[in-house]
Amino acid sequence: MTYLSALLLLFGGLGAAFLGVYLLYDMRNKQLLHKIELLDFPESYKKILSKTPHYAKLSTLDQKKLQRSILYFIYTKDFVGVELDVTDEMKVIIAFYACLLLVHKKTESYYEELKTIVIYPHAVVVKEVRSAGGIFTKEQFVIQGRSANHTVVLTWNEAKKEAYHLRHNNVIIHEFAHEIDFMDGYIDGVPPLEKSKYDSWVNTFYKEFKTLNSIALKDREWGKYKLFGAYAGSNEAEFFAVATERFFEAPASLKHHFPNLYNELESFYQIDTAKLLS
Image (cartoon, rainbow, N blue to C red; front, side):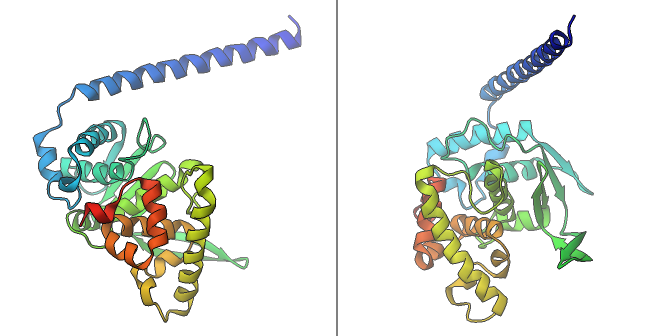
């Protein structure tokens, strides 16, 4: 056997193995989807959802779609509790807000790359090494949520307080907005968009972000930009995540003060949240 023949045989074998794994995964996924389709949505889950400010206002069709999506999310993600036991309430609330963001998007699966949800009882202190001008410093940060490496980290104390009331902030929505942002491979404040909508989105968001960033650095003359806060001015990705929070939590204020931003978010998420929550 020549070297070339051996090489072709090797790559052929690897290709066949890859195809076999893919077909097995696809078959198991279809079996899981079929199993979920046959499941009844528990009444206890509906009772939990009824306490949120969004669920009851959705159409019956959207509620039914979300019920399937919530079950799919719960059955395909690993929920890991740190110093707490993961409850059905935690799973349902996290799944609901994650899936609400995509309820009108054309997608076969929800957050396909996401594998794990880590839940802490309270805010977490993390240590990070940061570099500025070649100088490395070790700093401590208090976080209520984080999204990275196919994992979302949430603190239940904050998530629960924000889940049942409109508070402008919603850590679950914030972190899953980051997951959506990264669906095109980049976390840059630009989610997956149709080419025809890209320029309008970038121009609108970049203009408002630059203004907010300038105000946050000076810490004065906030005006209407107080709606976002300083954290949203740290980078474009955080601005998108906070804007998404306001779109779902304080849509009337966002639409009044930033109609262009509201229109871009409405076009992307394909839901008129100001009308929904009116």
